Amino acid sequence: MTAVTDENQGNGTAATSGPKEADAPEAPGKDDGRWDDGLIARRAAAVDGRGDGSGCADSGGGDSRTGGRGRSRTGSASAPAADEDDVRPQVEAYVPSGGPLPTRLDALRELVGLSRARLDRDTLTEAGRVLDEAAARQRLSSRHTVVAIAGATGSGKSTLFNALAGAQISDTGLRRPTTSQPIACSWTDGAAGLLDRLAIPGRLRRRPHPGPAASDEALQGLVLVDLPDHDSAATAHRDQVDRVLALVDAVIWVVDPEKYADAALHERYLRPLAGHAEVTFVVLNQIDRLPGEAAELVLDDLRRLLDEDGMALGEHGEPGATVMSLSALTGDGVPELRELVGRFVQDRTAATRRLSADVDAAAARLRPVYVAEGRPGLGERAREEFTDRLAEAVGA
Image (cartoon, rainbow, N blue to C red; front, side):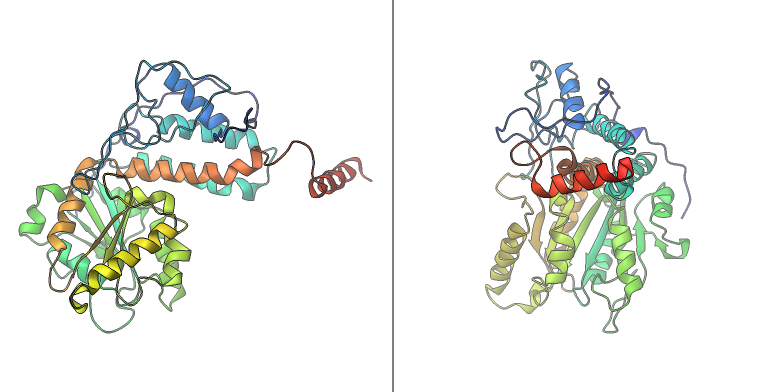
């Protein structure tokens, strides 16, 4: 593979800084069900009030992964300026330029800076990691979309990886674990920096063999990564899965009829990553082993479990995770997945969506620190903690 220097200006986004806040975020003024995440929401609302076109509610732009499942919730540039007391969360993740993601990152960075002297390091660790990884991703190619294929032992993820690549790149077989290290396949040049970030060595970087898969225009810019088994008996393999999943732009989860309801998958990965639904594909593989209508029944049960996990499903015109069934071995359903992935890659917003979901998660973790729940005043436990700290401060 030829290493090419990638140029990227903030992942195609233009940072717009709002007014500075001198103090830490305050709790909402009214108990009306709105979520005011303080500094982040106020600065995003300030951008909306200036009429820069970024005042979109929740998510703007279109998602063409599912051919009609996309949405368009664009805001109005002529909307009146938001009141300080009437602030709603701005969770814009789609517009590649002018969106509030850079503003939200700036606000989160300022919040962390203001909080370092007030909060312990562990409380701010995740927010700091999100900021570091966002900066690292935005310095790299915005023309490429990094998609990991993850799954359990025997789910057939390596077979699906090869089917999408159109070549036998990743080893498959009965020996377990078959995949011991992440393997990458890049459809175009210029992804060296992204693969360096994933710590994938040069000997495990591939290109699709000449043929229909390699020449597919929709897949130009795709970087596909085959991961080790997330339930591997080898701890080092699981650690690699966790490390790479925190860095990629999107994930294709491959499940099989036996393990699709495995608690390890849902409790350790799908449920914590429910907020990343729009950069998630969940594929029921090996449907060739299911007779009659059994495949549809299993797929419906998989959708039920995902709904219980809190993961939105991209169905009926709504945004969310793409859920489908296929057989990587026979090829049934693989062209449909390739088409969906191609549309997803050509949209070139996956990295922005991923980073926006990471900011959402970081803000949700910090919210209880800044926003008091229940009635004003100190509870018994808080009063005891305050007394202990005050006694320590005065040397008593």
